[in-house]
Amino acid sequence: MKVYNFSAGPSALPVPVLEKAQKEMLNYGSAGMSVMEMSHRSKAFLEIIQAAESGIRELMNIPSNYKVLFLQGGASAQFSMIPMNLYKKRKADFVNTGQWSKKAIEEAGRYGTVNVVASSADKTFNYIPELDASKFDKDADFFHFTMNNTIYGTRFTTLPESGSVPLVTDMSSSILSETYDVSKFGLIYAGAQKNIGPAGLVIVIIREDLVGNTLEGTPVMFDYKIHVENESMYNTPPTFGIYMAGLVFDWLKAEYGGISGIQKYNEEKAALLYDYLDESKMFSGTVEKKDRSLMNVPFVTGNEDIDKKFIDEAKKAGFVNLAGHRSVGGMRASIYNAMPMEGVKALVDFMKAFEKNN
Ligand code: PMP
Image (cartoon, rainbow, N blue to C red; front, top):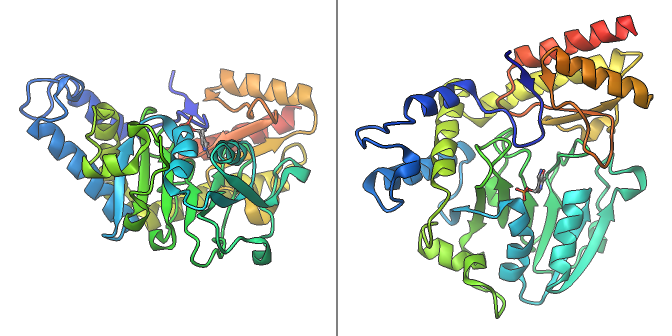
C-alpha cells in the first residue's frame, strides 16, 4: 500500500529521486557497477561529489569564500566538532530552543564556557524567545542557534544580531526549505536525513577564515582543516549518501527551479494544515503562530486517548509516523520538501473526517 510518510527523519525522499537511483542501482552510467561499489577515488565518483557540491552551491547561492564539506557522524558530531574548531577564547553564546540546542550546549560546555542568552524552556519550547543583544558576549567565539526545532515545530524567522561574532546554526530540519543568506553565517550544518538524502551524511558550510584553529588534541577526523584540504576525501566518505544528495539537488532545481520555488510550495503546504488546525474544534497547533515551522507541525486534541486513536486510525489509512516525539507526545506531521501537496491535502481530509466521527 502507498503511504504518506510524515516521519521527522529519516523522512520521505522525492519519488523521482528514488526512481532514478533504482534505475542506476546496478549500473551507474557506463561504470558497469553500482555507485555503492565504486572507489571513492574513481573518476565517476569524483564527478558525483563535484556535481553534488556545485548543486548545493547553486541552490543556496553559497559565496566562494565558503567551503562545503560532506562529513559523517550526523549533526550530533557537529555539536563537538564546532567547539573543537571554533573555540579560541573558549566561550560561546547559545539560544536554548529545545533538545537539540541543549545537546549542542552540553557538548560545547565540555571545552569551554557557554552563555545561554535566551531559552524557551518555560513553555516546553513552543516559541522562539526574544533576544536581548545586551546579553550577548561581544567577545564570544561564536553564537549558536537551532534554525528549526524538529521536535517542537518552531523556527527562527529573523537572524540573531550577533555583530562580528560568527553565527553558527543547526539547519538539519530546514536546510533547502526556504532561502537563507549564507553570507550572514560563519557556519551552517545539517544532517542529511530530512531534506537532503539518506542518513549517514552531514553537510557543513563553513567560512574559510574559521578553518584551521583546532584545539590541541582534536582528533584528526574532527578537524575541519583536514577535510577542507582533502575535499571531503581524507578517508572514505559516505559515497552513496553523497550521490543521493546530488540527485535531490538536481530534483529541486528541475522541479521547483530552486529554493524560492520550493519555499513558496512549502508555505502553501504548511498553510493548508495550519489553517485547518486554527478552525478545527478538535485539533490545535501547539506553537505560537509567529514561530510556526514550515517543516514540522505538532498538534494535539487535548485528550491523550483520542490522540492515540487518531494516530492508530491514521496509520491504518496510510498516514504513517504521525506520533509526536517521545518527549512531548501528541502528534507531529513533518512535511519536508519531498512531501507533496496531495499528501497534506489527504491528511487534512482525513483529520476532518476523524473530527466529524469523534
Ligand atoms: N539537530 C536537529 C535540529 C535534529 O532534528 C536532529 C535529529 N533529528 C539532530 C540535530 C541530530 O541529528 P543526527 O541524528 O544526525 O545526529
